[in-house]
Length: 259
Image (tube, rainbow, N blue to C red; front, top):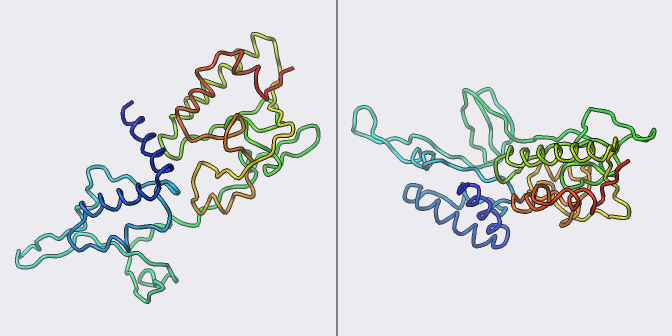
């Protein structure tokens, strides 16, 4: 629990004081890297902390690899690992040609950029129609990060981008089970989140500004910044919104309509 609390506090601090958080990260990195290492080039991104996902280094072992070690003959030193920060120009027979003109030789290349999300979130390739009208993600809104507006009896699971993915998945599973139990008790057979005249606001998906999310922004369902139509990336807010309320407050005093 203490790690969850620490991580959530760090995220909120980063969003509230981005410049201070960026300075703290840079200062900590400087302490861990070898003397004279070019932190400004290699470990100072243009974006703020938690605008994109943060890479965690347990026990700082990665930074220790940036130092030097004695060669086998103990007469000279050599680098154990090297970081190169640049833009890729093209692939070559030997490896990768960078825009700076430097060629990186490589036995193996792992591609980790250029991710594109599928269309029509969260249905993607699954076709859904409601009263003969096909579901179109950009025309819909997300209700509590669990249901899609005006699509009855459908829920989906999206975890946290700033914490354990399954942490939010557990909360959603509990919420859906309570919803089904409530419907069974009331003998309802249908549940739908009706958006009414609610308008989407400029709120980033998953609270991040990663390239793959910005490229897909126009193809995603809308949401608001606060309230029941917001998809929060906060454990505290989700506990209050999805778990700690009584059934009457959770299911009756909201946009959910039952029949």
